[in-house]
Figure 1 (cartoon, helix red, strand yellow):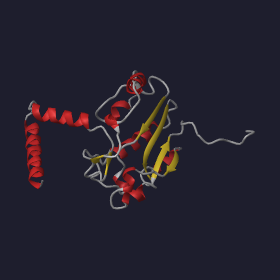
Figure 2 (cartoon, one colour):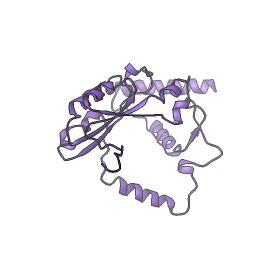
Figure 3 (cartoon, rainbow, N blue to C red):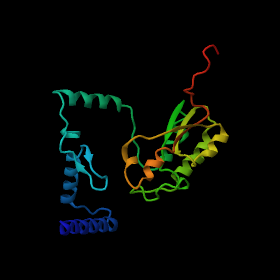
Figure 4 (cartoon, rainbow, N blue to C red):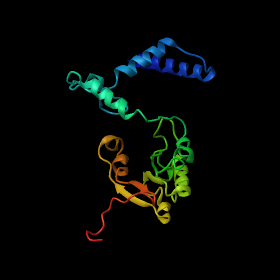
Length: 213
């Protein structure tokens, strides 16, 4: 088994090097295997996230049991829900311009960047990292939070965006439940209690006033 893992690692490193040298390089066989794997692994996983294994005692994802005709109904509902949705890739700032937000009208934005390094989070958490995205989002929020056509929510850890409070932003503190928070060395269990969502001044408050106000 170790020999197989070593061989696969060598193949992956060789493929990565070729792709880095030649933007037009392709390996049809590897591409086909990747597509097959992606198409057949849409299902729940158990065990550690580092070595995930498919559920053996239940059917989930593409293996999930459903009543006849139920899947087509789901797909039609999904098509209807996404009919007017545009999915963009690349930097978050692409969708935070006046041309596609306040320039069109009242706009709500939920910003959930990789959390700030200043909060003490793991700097190697993501495969593609950004240790500045949270700070950049906060600066954008400070510059645009007073726009009455923008209702902005910024997610982060306590200690990351407290400066927003002095600019009229309202913090909502919450505790994450389950998921990856319960894995690892215990740091995730503690961090799940540090979650904060900051709402800009023009967001509608969910708090109810006195009955006869």
